[in-house]
Image (cartoon, rainbow, N blue to C red):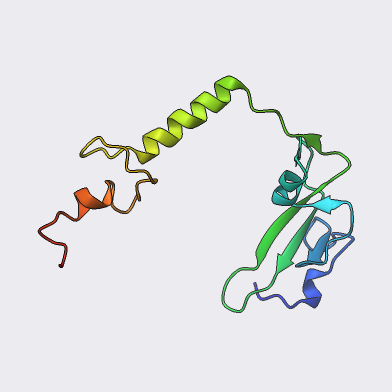
Length: 126
């Protein structure tokens, strides 16, 4: 579906079923999930209030869903158990399955192991 910038302005929601605005032209009081998170808020179970569309030449338009800021709830605080679980998950992502060492960085999924294991010294050019 090829859209122009003018097609993206539908505040009544007649064309797309949701109020639709062009990219970066959302009215005040609406925010994306990332914008809510920057305000230490979350959607809190509310329905999508509107959407932003950004037309592209060769692909489907980019879509961002908007939520009402006044209905957003505060982000739940991090508990000690959540903090420990997150630390454990991050440690597992840094541990090389080949040598078992902590690589000090997240192991690339494309390699599946740390860089020294993926490229042994015999392959590294001097």
